[in-house]
Length: 394
Image (cartoon, rainbow, N blue to C red; front, top):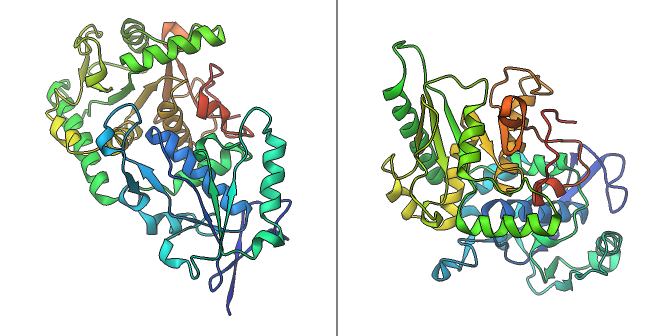
């Protein structure tokens, strides 16, 4: 029997993490199984990361979970689960996250009958402290006798959060799309760049930048955000098309000509005027104008969202809504890209890959510069949104 020792960035105060070391036993590896992961793309990514971090806490490998191809309220015929490795590169994930978290296939399980099924607590009385106590209990010897702990009950997105943003960020960095989806996202980016080259100025060396705008103005979002504004007594969650166009026009760093890619669910719009009303020199495009509707139609909701996510991630500038999980995770990844260049804040800097929140007014009537606070002790602000948006990471 061979034990392999892996060094972790930070030990856990309980379980079998000692002296900053974590041992995987490759002959008798133990596993955690979780319910099917559901809802939107980025809710599913958060749920997956939370399941990974739970498995890490229990000294176990996460059995590859099923994702969901569509949202609950549409595409009923596509609600069948979709395997994790049909969306994300399984081998690449384990390579990038080696020593931190691990995902295993069901074929890795030696004895499929050696399973204990446990119910995650729920309800208002199920506090953060009670949830942590339950996880500590799962790491004790009584449970260690079982090869697999199967958690039943609610979607992992709804589990209590015990980990800092930095831990989630490590997991998200390991999520790489499979080649087929990545190639289609690259094709969309190429089409946007080609469109930009047609509207550029006289300088042949000038590359027209593209701004990706996550326009949350669809009818389903407007119903949701207005209800949330009413419940929370806030007024800066929803943004109209007019507010978005005005604030984007006031971003000082944007000089004409600029291509605007509008990431929006066209089928959920109440009118088709989305390409109208932008400042002169700003050239808006969407999937339809780029002739890419067929690429998206060939895929389920989840894959469509994954393609749009990559397109927005690679934009020169991103503008989104700070109460959108999609926008918030994008800003987290873009913040990490900025940090890797040696910059710790975007305040007053002409940084690469800046991001903005159009629902919050910033300087000169433009949107607020936005970087993720990587020192946050939980993912609360990203999971559920916040109006506390800053150009600093701490």
